[in-house]
Image 1 (cartoon, rainbow, N blue to C red):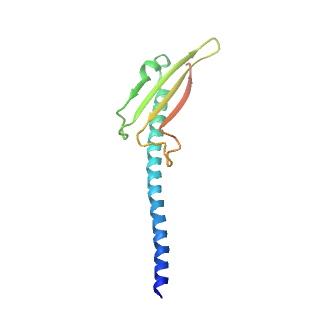
Image 2 (image 1 turned 90 degrees about the horizontal axis):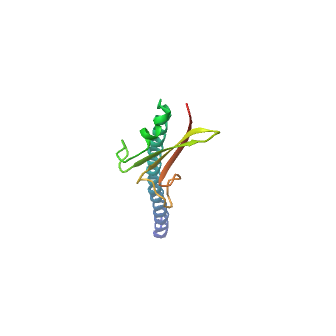
Image 3 (image 1 turned 90 degrees about the vertical axis):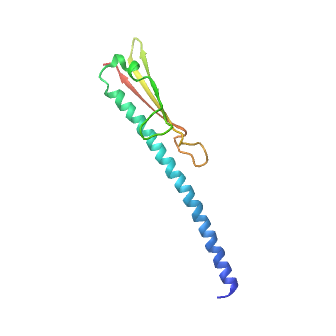
Length: 127
């Protein structure tokens, strides 16, 4: 093997390793973004399920309208629950919106598809 062949093979190996390193960095970042998004989604769904299971329709607003900042398994997260009632001649229902904002979610080029927060909404009919 000549010196030129060795230099060419080293250049090819170096290029491949640099590309693999960039891939690993991006993969690890996206993996952590996915984990953060999953945690935020779990927190939002958990609150929605708590509201749906609550037995007293009349006190949903007073019980669940809140902003929480000390959440289990989520440092720096904020969960806002908003219950609004729609009452007219044709309908009586409550709309529950839960927004979980998390510092681990970003809007950069490798951002979570969910953005910086997760919003879940459901409607509960009068009972």
